[in-house]
Image (cartoon, rainbow, N blue to C red; front, side):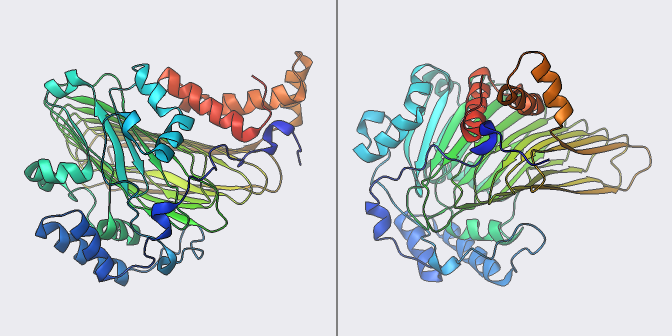
Length: 469
């Protein structure tokens, strides 16, 4: 079935594609070398051990081949990328103190308003390579919660930082984690003390403004024993004729009995390569939840992972991906059961139209000794027309015989019968199509806080251009 429904015609259209005057980016250097890495470290006045870490990672990056098993990455030209752009000389704690052009961007995105309405416990805003705004609820600060940009955390809490940094994702894990390790800048550092519950989410917002920019934030979250934290991130960029690269690393340590939730609503413009490594280590009785929404970018390769290291640890990934013309969303999840009585659940939903492509790529590994572990994988794809594509690449590695493992995958098309039935109940064809798509993604949307579920629905409807409801 080929469709020309108006409410889907805009899938891949973009609302956040304006650019501010590119003053800082215009003079930034292109290309990657040891001198560039040394300059980044010197500008940040880092300790010697961090410079050595960066230089070792650079050598690993140069040796590692490009991945050839996923999306087409031939359009990435490392020599053309600007690896560090400093948009302002200082970080502020009041929106009014930001430079006018940067403040204007965040006003358009509605971030200050969300903070004013107390929808967030803390906010970080990264513009280009560094965090330009940061705040945290005073009550959380009194309870010992640390919420800083990663550069500041290295300076102010070096021992705690060094104890956990790169312990979940070593720099040599893959080519792009090595690249991030060499040139990382910005990101969030969170430490939640034992027994403290951060009930209202902390949020970070990442914005690329410069053409051919590389953004390489590094996020490290430590949830101490019996604690809880929910972290939200959002991302946008202007539309340019040439490509930018976003290659982040996210490490999360969830200690005994703690729970962490990490929610992403990724809405990069369609000239951004989004190549991210995310992994959590869940210890005894810990719970790690990834909520992953991928609406934007040219190419996304992202597979949030949980290493279940302690008995009764739990991991969950709920992901949604939209691919329109020219987009390839290659996403999924990894669950590694390394202890007995661990459990994992992966639910993936994807929608493709206009020649867009979605791929689910997942791994579940139950290691020797992980007795009585359970895992469930469910991935559903919805094709809106006959020219789009969806692929599923599941990998299951079970090394014990007293475990429970389930995998289910479906690919479906919006059928004329579905549309006819809904239209017979009084809906227009556009309303019927919009209802089908929203119903398809509802299991993911319902896991978001109400205001963010509304935002996700708004982004979906914006991309579908003309959806009713």
